[in-house]
Image (cartoon, rainbow, N blue to C red; front, side):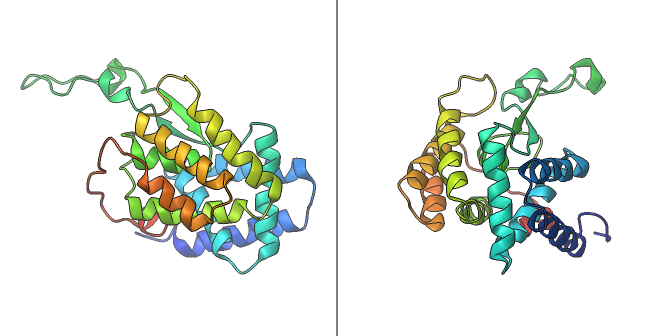
Length: 230
């Protein structure tokens, strides 16, 4: 892949600038607006995974100050039900299109309309990505667990965020919003919330998510840097 806005070096530079901006401005409104703007400007396709990578780069850094700034911003977002979100197609969207057409027959994709999408916060997005058939190839359990562990570790840098996020996930599992979560996704979210609220380590929270029952196994996914380095 050629160098571009999503190459590793560019993402590291962007993550450093984002962390510096959050550290040097402790205004909660500014911090949340900045985080959402970054997610929005990266876009909804490869963009949100790239946004998650920015957050994970901060999580892996040596700067506790940067981690506290990001976690505190998540706390603000959680209090306002306004997490920086990415979109995935609803898990049932595949049923809107026929599995096959007769030989020689083709239809423009616009005939069926755009597949419905749902917006998900960071942990919810990762979990749906790992459990549901959407417009993205499903994450492997190994990749998912590693990213989830780092996200939980990051959120734990702010006590309020660490309290609010599992509460939010628990509430999500009780939501009846059609097309948002499959049973497997709900089970993982429940496992995360339960382990997190019982003060388990991030590693154990990720292990609990992976141990939750799953309806489907992820298909093979081509190794690309957006997935490999997540």
